[in-house]
Image (cartoon, rainbow, N blue to C red):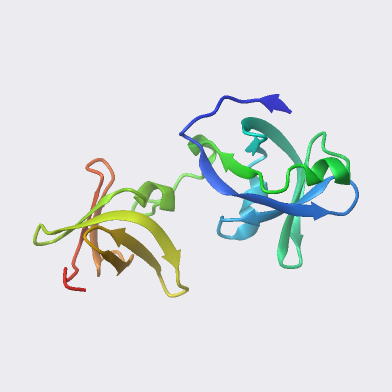
Length: 172
């Protein structure tokens, strides 16, 4: 496992949540959609014992409702247990290219949210997945939940201006 410098550019994809079997496989709590996408990146950055390290994956799959992965050089259950709770991340360059009008959640987090009338509602703290559509959790003078429905509640996402224009009543 190669040592990697800590960087703010990393995108968190999940955590190691346990071990699977006796040959060093790990269980993964994935934030990706679909959840098994986390094993498709080939290499991860893992924050192990306070240090970021690059690891190569030699396998990964869904096992029931769980995602499991095999990290190169990690061949023992006891050693794999030492990775429990470690954060998994990748570099932005590893992400798939998106179509026009599509965004990764990390791109939206921290953006200023402004109504079409110019009223600033706050910034995107995080997003929620509801099934029907994603929801922006906007924190400002109070917390607001704004559906991420482009063309309806969300009028424009301007990444270069770091803001989202919404058609939203500030009283909501």
